[in-house]
Image 1: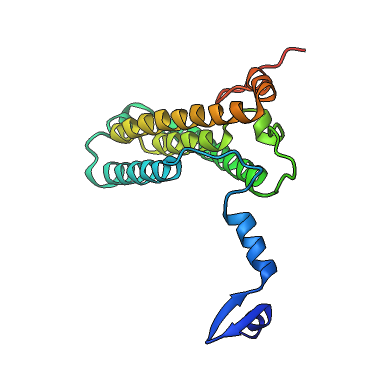
Image 2: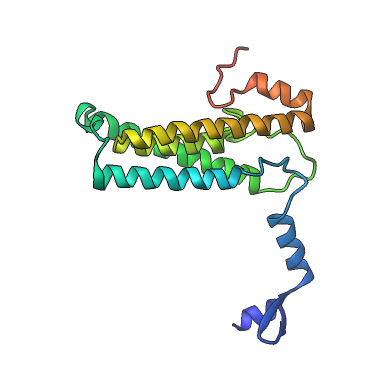
Length: 191
C-alpha cells in the first residue's frame, strides 16, 4: 500500500494518478495517432464469434455430441497434430502481431511491414481463424465448423474494411504493400 501511496496523491483513501501517469494511460488506452482505426463493431463482433464458437464447440464436442461424426472418420493421428500445429501458429501470429501493433508507439504513422506483417497483412485476424480451426481439428464438431465459417467471413469483412481505411490514409504505399503481401495467404516473392 505504501508504494501505491508514493506513486500518486492520496485523497479520501483514493489514489489519484499523477499527471505523467495520466498521460501514459491516455496515450496507451485511448485513440493513438499512429493507429488507423477499426470497424466500430469489430471488437464486439469478435467477442460474440469467440463466445459462440467456444460455446458450440464445447457443448457439442463434450456433452451433446450431435455433430461429431467426423471424429470417427478422421484419425486422431492426423487431426490432433494438425490441430496443435494450427494452435501454435495462431499463438505466434497473435502474439507477434499484437506486440508489433500495440507494443510500440510509432512517432510517424506508416505501413507496418516487419515481422508477421511481412507474411500476411492481417496476422491477428488470421490467428483467430487458425485458433478456431485448430480447436475444430482437435474435436470435429460440424456445428462448430459452421460457426468457424461464419467467424471467418466476419473476420474477412473486418480485414477488407480496415484495408479501405489504410488505403485512404497511406495511399500508394499501402497499395504497394497489398501487391507484395497477401491478405491471409503468404505470397511467394519473385526477385
